[in-house]
Image (cartoon, rainbow, N blue to C red; front, side, top):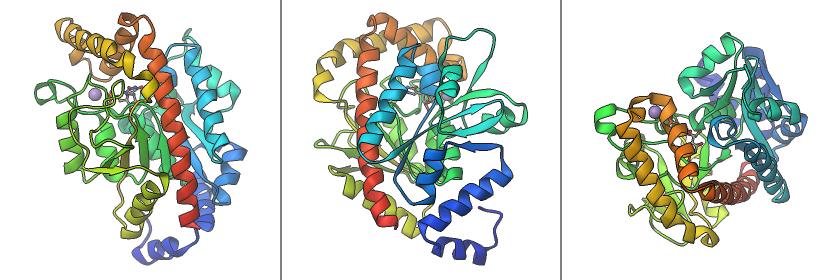
Length: 340
Ligand code: PSU
Ligand code: MN
């Protein structure tokens, strides 16, 4: 939209959300190879609530077939709350807003010979231009969601400043994306494979509104409810979250918001054991040089933690994403009422 003149941009801002989404999808289709599932296109055109889901979880974050089963489960949870799910990924260089069964199988099935890229901002243009397949990270998904006019996105864990990031400079593109792209991310916080204190500092510098969603002040740490760091804000209902998103748009601030939803209480108990595995995995990654391997670091750590906990971490992972999908859908429903 930055190519528009300022008066044109103002005129576009005055359009109702319905008109805006039609123009946003139509114009996106003129610019990029884009396929939108009919259910999603209809929802966007008629101002119904839509929740984006990412695909790096499917391609790099979870093993088969849990990755695919979880995607169906998330999509159903979102539908039950009255919103439409849009899982975002890339196939043959085409952007997919909503994945059908075949798309999902192709991205999620065990790899034979087709390489599936982990796609953050820097990778989007090459994957399209060179006709590749990709699972989009939070940053990649935010960009494509924004292109389609989707304002709310639910997922598991945010990328961040890695432990030792002050030396390796390994800082996830998720953080800068939240600073520039207007999509609200609802997730279970950031894993303690990361330096959560520095992650929050970086988000502040980027101007990102960070709020815990629930009854605690602490920023959640994915497998455990509390990170030991406070979130700058707290909300405990979907309408308040939606009001923050809406006001950010009214102000024309332009960036995203982050809502950290603590892991459900039923999974607190596993948290401590998983935490020990996280610490061990981080130590191993430093010893074997994995921690200096860029985009491979996060998937390696996730996989190692799952191994060390004999799959317990995977169960918690599924439970907490199901929870963020539910909250994301509730926020999207409230936001749709405000944007009419
Ligand atoms: N954290 C998780 N699970 C994940 C990811 C992060 O608990 O699957 C994925 C997300 O797609 C996130 C990405 O956007 O990893 C961040 O990767 P990196 O650290 O390389 O920026
Ligand atoms: Mn990184």
